[in-house]
Image (cartoon, rainbow, N blue to C red; front, side, top):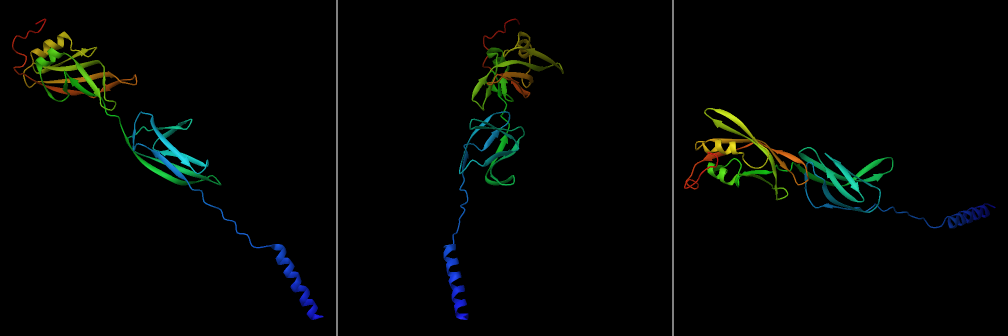
Length: 232
């Protein structure tokens, strides 16, 4: 009887094991993300910095910019920044329970677009110029080196030293007024002309005020022979 019970129990476990089948192992593969961001490593203030962001591996991702904000229009990304320093772009994998896993990070330098560089009759600001060259060429210009373009001057003021005092004269375009030319003609070599409230028209249609600058006035023989100032 005991032997019969043992045989029945052994048969039961054999049938149960057969019914269960072989052990099955389930492997969950980790998502393989591929992120490409380019091409620049500098972001400019007050500019739509367009960048290419390509994320492969899934749709459960989020892109954030610490130190700025992102605009996304039909897959085209623009990074907007307001303060000089640095900004960090991070691509996150979205996980359950509102969790995020960073899968890519890029650090950007944030810079201000340089102001246009002023020129007085083709002489760069804060340089030395013959006073008669000012009268002869009679024009202020500015070069926007960021776009490598010449930007129009809309108006400017000059502060002219006379007899230990200073006087401010205004032009409403890029040229020196007749009164400016008369005052400049009588300046002594070594005098300094101060320029302020210099406004120029930027390529994007905005008006920008250039930082004040100065020009050191000298006197050479280049313009002296046969030269006459109209109105003097």
